[in-house]
Image (tube, rainbow, N blue to C red; front, side, top):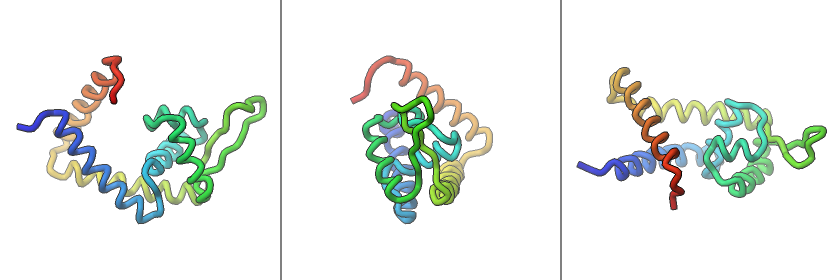
Length: 143
Protein backbone atom coordinates (compact mmCIF):
# COMPACT_ATOMS: atom_id res chain seq x y z
CA UNK A 1 0.00 0.00 0.00
CA UNK A 2 1.31 3.44 -0.93
CA UNK A 3 2.16 5.91 1.82
CA UNK A 4 -0.33 8.65 2.64
CA UNK A 5 2.03 11.46 1.60
CA UNK A 6 2.65 9.79 -1.75
CA UNK A 7 -1.08 9.33 -2.43
CA UNK A 8 -1.77 12.96 -1.49
CA UNK A 9 1.02 14.21 -3.76
CA UNK A 10 -0.04 11.92 -6.58
CA UNK A 11 -3.65 13.08 -6.33
CA UNK A 12 -2.63 16.74 -6.18
CA UNK A 13 -0.39 16.31 -9.22
CA UNK A 14 -3.12 14.68 -11.28
CA UNK A 15 -5.76 17.26 -10.33
CA UNK A 16 -3.33 20.13 -10.87
CA UNK A 17 -2.30 18.76 -14.28
CA UNK A 18 -5.96 18.64 -15.38
CA UNK A 19 -6.64 22.15 -14.10
CA UNK A 20 -3.47 23.52 -15.72
CA UNK A 21 -4.35 21.95 -19.07
CA UNK A 22 -7.90 23.33 -19.05
CA UNK A 23 -6.77 26.73 -17.75
CA UNK A 24 -4.12 26.99 -20.46
CA UNK A 25 -6.87 26.60 -23.06
CA UNK A 26 -8.33 29.82 -21.61
CA UNK A 27 -4.95 31.56 -21.76
CA UNK A 28 -4.34 31.31 -18.02
CA UNK A 29 -1.01 30.55 -16.37
CA UNK A 30 -0.43 28.64 -13.11
CA UNK A 31 -1.81 30.41 -10.05
CA UNK A 32 -4.35 32.46 -11.97
CA UNK A 33 -7.28 30.00 -11.72
CA UNK A 34 -7.24 29.89 -7.92
CA UNK A 35 -6.97 33.68 -7.70
CA UNK A 36 -9.91 34.07 -10.07
CA UNK A 37 -11.92 31.60 -7.97
CA UNK A 38 -10.98 33.49 -4.79
CA UNK A 39 -12.05 36.85 -6.21
CA UNK A 40 -15.27 35.40 -7.62
CA UNK A 41 -16.19 33.96 -4.22
CA UNK A 42 -14.96 36.78 -1.99
CA UNK A 43 -15.21 39.90 -4.12
CA UNK A 44 -12.69 42.72 -3.83
CA UNK A 45 -9.68 41.86 -1.65
CA UNK A 46 -6.24 43.23 -0.95
CA UNK A 47 -3.18 41.32 -2.09
CA UNK A 48 -2.32 39.84 1.33
CA UNK A 49 -5.84 38.45 1.75
CA UNK A 50 -5.57 36.82 -1.68
CA UNK A 51 -2.19 35.34 -0.77
CA UNK A 52 -3.57 33.98 2.51
CA UNK A 53 -6.72 32.57 0.92
CA UNK A 54 -4.86 30.93 -1.98
CA UNK A 55 -1.88 29.85 0.14
CA UNK A 56 0.57 31.60 -2.18
CA UNK A 57 3.48 33.82 -1.12
CA UNK A 58 2.54 37.53 -1.34
CA UNK A 59 5.44 38.28 -3.72
CA UNK A 60 4.29 35.48 -6.02
CA UNK A 61 0.73 36.81 -5.91
CA UNK A 62 2.09 40.22 -6.90
CA UNK A 63 3.70 38.88 -10.06
CA UNK A 64 0.62 36.82 -10.95
CA UNK A 65 -1.59 39.88 -10.46
CA UNK A 66 0.62 41.95 -12.78
CA UNK A 67 0.00 39.47 -15.60
CA UNK A 68 -3.71 39.30 -14.79
CA UNK A 69 -3.99 43.09 -14.82
CA UNK A 70 -2.10 43.25 -18.13
CA UNK A 71 -4.52 40.67 -19.58
CA UNK A 72 -7.56 42.66 -18.41
CA UNK A 73 -8.78 40.07 -15.88
CA UNK A 74 -8.45 42.23 -12.77
CA UNK A 75 -8.12 45.83 -11.74
CA UNK A 76 -6.27 47.23 -8.73
CA UNK A 77 -7.40 50.35 -6.95
CA UNK A 78 -6.59 52.28 -3.80
CA UNK A 79 -9.25 53.08 -1.27
CA UNK A 80 -9.58 56.52 0.20
CA UNK A 81 -7.66 56.64 3.47
CA UNK A 82 -5.65 53.50 2.70
CA UNK A 83 -2.80 54.40 0.38
CA UNK A 84 -0.65 51.42 1.31
CA UNK A 85 -2.97 48.66 0.10
CA UNK A 86 -4.15 48.00 -3.41
CA UNK A 87 -7.51 46.31 -3.64
CA UNK A 88 -8.04 43.77 -6.39
CA UNK A 89 -11.33 43.08 -8.14
CA UNK A 90 -12.44 41.25 -11.26
CA UNK A 91 -13.13 43.09 -14.48
CA UNK A 92 -16.12 41.94 -16.56
CA UNK A 93 -13.68 39.86 -18.64
CA UNK A 94 -12.20 38.41 -15.44
CA UNK A 95 -15.63 37.51 -14.12
CA UNK A 96 -16.50 35.70 -17.35
CA UNK A 97 -13.24 33.72 -17.26
CA UNK A 98 -13.81 33.02 -13.54
CA UNK A 99 -17.18 31.47 -14.33
CA UNK A 100 -15.52 29.21 -16.89
CA UNK A 101 -12.85 28.22 -14.35
CA UNK A 102 -15.61 27.50 -11.84
CA UNK A 103 -17.14 25.08 -14.39
CA UNK A 104 -13.75 23.42 -14.94
CA UNK A 105 -13.27 22.97 -11.18
CA UNK A 106 -16.77 21.53 -10.88
CA UNK A 107 -16.11 19.05 -13.71
CA UNK A 108 -12.84 17.93 -12.14
CA UNK A 109 -14.56 17.53 -8.76
CA UNK A 110 -17.22 15.37 -10.42
CA UNK A 111 -14.57 13.26 -12.13
CA UNK A 112 -12.61 12.82 -8.90
CA UNK A 113 -15.75 11.75 -7.03
CA UNK A 114 -17.25 9.68 -9.83
CA UNK A 115 -16.44 6.34 -8.18
CA UNK A 116 -17.49 7.40 -4.69
CA UNK A 117 -20.92 7.26 -3.10
CA UNK A 118 -22.30 10.48 -1.64
CA UNK A 119 -21.48 9.19 1.83
CA UNK A 120 -17.89 8.45 0.76
CA UNK A 121 -17.57 11.93 -0.76
CA UNK A 122 -18.68 13.53 2.49
CA UNK A 123 -16.32 11.30 4.45
CA UNK A 124 -13.41 12.08 2.09
CA UNK A 125 -13.95 15.84 2.47
CA UNK A 126 -14.07 15.49 6.23
CA UNK A 127 -10.93 13.36 6.32
CA UNK A 128 -9.02 15.73 4.02
CA UNK A 129 -10.05 18.70 6.18
CA UNK A 130 -8.79 16.82 9.24
CA UNK A 131 -5.47 15.97 7.53
CA UNK A 132 -5.05 19.56 6.35
CA UNK A 133 -5.79 20.88 9.81
CA UNK A 134 -3.32 18.48 11.42
CA UNK A 135 -0.57 19.48 9.00
CA UNK A 136 -1.20 23.23 9.29
CA UNK A 137 -1.45 23.20 13.08
CA UNK A 138 1.77 21.25 13.52
CA UNK A 139 3.68 24.54 13.47
CA UNK A 140 6.36 23.14 11.22
CA UNK A 141 7.25 24.91 7.99
CA UNK A 142 7.41 22.75 4.90
CA UNK A 143 10.32 22.95 2.55
